[in-house]
Image (cartoon, rainbow over all chains, first blue to last red):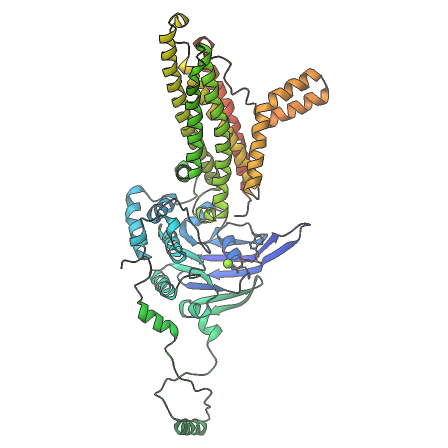
Length: 287
Length: 278
Ligand SMILES: Nc1ncnc2c1ncn2[C@@H]1O[C@H](COP(=O)(O)OP(=O)(O)O)[C@@H](O)[C@H]1O
Ligand SMILES: [Mg+2]
């Protein structure tokens, strides 16, 4: 089967300023995303993540190289039938309500009037926007725009989702919900490509990652390959006093092992936040 | 599931959304309000009371308001509706769907054409009503002057509205053509007004060149004539009488002339938009 996404020798130059000065946003990138995985595209701001995504979607013309979606050249309109795309910092028609917006995109994707209403209900509920669905988009907060944006990406039930910074500007509750949703999509057999620079979040979510810097691929592999493999382990134990720690150190030394760090294990602010605020109590959900 | 042929359904969806965005804008309401006020205002000048010529005066006022506000509205709306898609990056989401760029661009054009159609229909209808009422009053005041029945041909008024719409559609297409490659909205608006002036005045220039009789002048006139439509062609003759009503063939020919120019500009816009970075 053809990979979900493929870039071969992708180069994108942007003209900047006068005299034909060019900026290389993506530099000879080779990338393959197999179907059925959550794939993270990581990198600092300006490293070419969004440009790569736009080239993969056929929204910008590559200066060199080629991109394919499920084996079809990205430039073909038909190639985009199987993709849902959430742009970076999305903005939508402010004159529509959330429901109208998702319906509009659904019809563009070829959904008939009959199936449309059901699909819109399903995806709006899936992203937790049912309560706010009849409000005008112009009244939405950033987090709500991200969620209605995800709904429009899902409306035609595509096999592949491309999400550009889906959790930028979203609070921890929203981010956690987004992560759960993305895992659910993968478990339903979808492929998800997402970008972020929130590395902790990506580590827990992605099956594979690629790291870009200055438009170039600097690392690629499974999270375990790239970030695991220090040959060390973490143990969580009940509190020990100083004498006990010294004793433990000696016990380990007798076995040729070292004790490399002792720290109080906190729960982390994230965990406290999620517990106190409650996972399901994001904005836009019913009170 | 092979290929994705050009779809008039998707074009229509984009047009519908464009029209919906336009009619929910306050600036549009202001424009329509002003134009309506002008048409009604012409009616207020009844103190003059100079018989049948007064009706012609009201009609001129009405069509003048339509040209003035209609052209401004068309240029502003076309540029605004196009650039809001680019600047808010809604075009990005739209074109990531299985949508042809041609469907998007022609959808925008059709949306504006529908908007201007509503505008022209509303104002022409109002103008006809004002004329009808005033004509009735004048007939009561001066039965002698109207011995032959009503003096105004309402088919001629309708033709006036139709020609006005054709001019606005051409103007929208040219503005969209500029917008398809322009970096800023202001540039598109300024060029739109430039096109408006050229289209309205080019018959004068051509006459001048012809009279001057120079080969260079004729060539220049020919060049402009080839690049821009002549709005003089799409204007009413100076009469509202039924006797002067053009034959149906002429109506068709004028319609083909206007829509042909709009289509040509639209196709050029598609060509230039094809490679634009969104
Ligand atoms: N339309 C454009 N014109 C000129 N330069 C651009 C354009 N889009 C992106 N760039 C430049 O390309 C580089 C990569 O940008 P981008 O792909 O948005 O990075 P990222 O998404 O990783 O933050 C940046 O230096 C950016 O300034
Ligand atoms: Mg980016």
